[in-house]
Image (cartoon, rainbow, N blue to C red; front, side, top):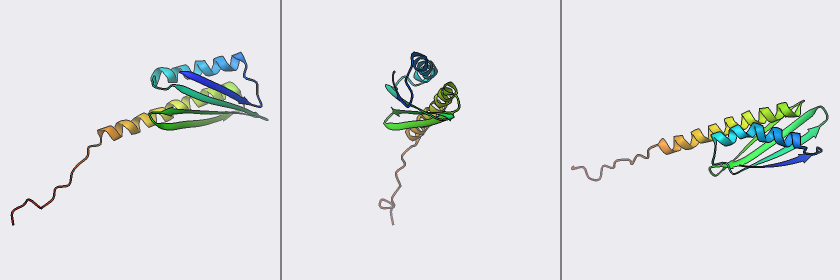
Length: 111
């Protein structure tokens, strides 16, 4: 899985890059069909924000997380993304199991 990390008011260091890759490695194991993950890190006074988005089975899945500490925000975003992907996977499997029923007409009944 390719992780694209960009920063807004922050320089992406090797430590931040490693932390993001380590936290999202679990997501990559559970959902191997994910190809790319886009991570945007925004630093504001007293708050670190993370926005993570990806495309999973034809739908865009996006989560946001914010915390006072950057590494806590990364962990929160990883768990939120895993929950959102699991929800999307459940929606897809429910659609597969739904059976299409044809209404019976009365045209062939004898009078």
